[in-house]
Amino acid sequence: MTAALHLHGVSKSFGRVTAVRDVSLAVEPGEYITILGPSGSGKSSMLRLIAGFDRPDAGRVEVLGRDLAGTAVHQRGVGFVFQSFALFPHLSVFENLAFGLRYRKHAPVPDQAQIGRAVDAALALVGLGGLGPRSIAQISGGQKQRVALARCLVGQPAVVLLDEPLGALDANLRDQMTLELKRIQRQLGSTFLHVTGNEQEALAIGSRVAVLDRGALVQIDRPRRLFEQPATSQVARLLNCFNPLPGQAVAGRLVGPALDVPLPGAAAQLRGAAVCMVRRDRVQVDAGQALHDGHGDPGVARITGAYLASEYAGSRVLALFETGVGAHFEVEYHLSHRRPPEFVQGQRYALHWQAADTLAYAA
Ligand SMILES: Nc1ncnc2c1ncn2[C@@H]1O[C@H](COP(=O)(O)OP(=O)(O)OP(=O)(O)O)[C@@H](O)[C@H]1O
Image (cartoon, rainbow, N blue to C red; front, side):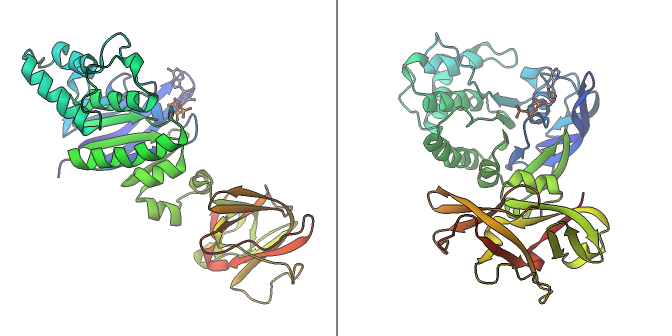
């Protein structure tokens, strides 16, 4: 099957900064790809190269098998939704959508009735049927977001690029639009690339998630696999649900001043500087045997930590411990299936988990 979008070894530098580093990526028609990366990892630069706002220094971009080198922005079959929406404030909602169809350089639509049908269909698709006559000043932020999306979709692009599309919305609207974006994409069956710095958004929306780290594509996987098997410690950090434990790998164990845990499986072969990643919701806390070092059971990893505080976040509680290894160690309790005990501030506890649940990486 011809990929909807195919990047072949695409790179782009600005002076000394390499914003996009040898990225290759094939996206099937109908896929919803989220692109996750920290600030400055090259997410927007990658979208801009696909849209044709910038030219790659090396590599090529293809849409539906067509090499886009030298193809102008408006002839690429690619639509772009800006975080700032970039709507025409003096035009009505209807005219914001109609403008592009009427005046675009490639295949403009002169027929008013045809424009009307296309605009109405796009507004209905994003849930704004009947809002065409309103001025942009008379609609809410969430509605502006939908208008920006409809304006992109009305041109029927083969690939839709969304640059942090939910960034300007408050939390409730963001959740609502997360579902809406997926529904709209499914209904259209078109191909979406959606940039975000938010791991929950990336995992919730993407059929696959592509992770960028310093301009390089370090992993692309289905959300569940990404979550369970992050390819690098950087990917694991980005997912924001692991405790990093830095140390030295020696004879099948990760050791440090306050650390001595078994390395699981093939990771037992690691030597030298390494980091273990421990999922916050996989950790058990025992008050009774706080200082027992756990060497007795090779299947269990254990460190000790002094309880600091808890953070309540609705259906979850995060308990924080000072272990002397790296940053604060966090234990997550999903209240639907376990409750935290009454921790005593300053008291030391044993923090333990199945060694097989540890992820380990060379540092
Ligand atoms: N036009 C430019 N001129 C110079 N440097 C640039 C330009 N565009 C991007 N960069 C640099 O390239 C790197 C990647 O930037 P980019 O905006 O693509 O990252 P990002 O992942 O989208 O970040 P954010 O999430 O903060 O928007 C950064 O170091 C940035 O400063």
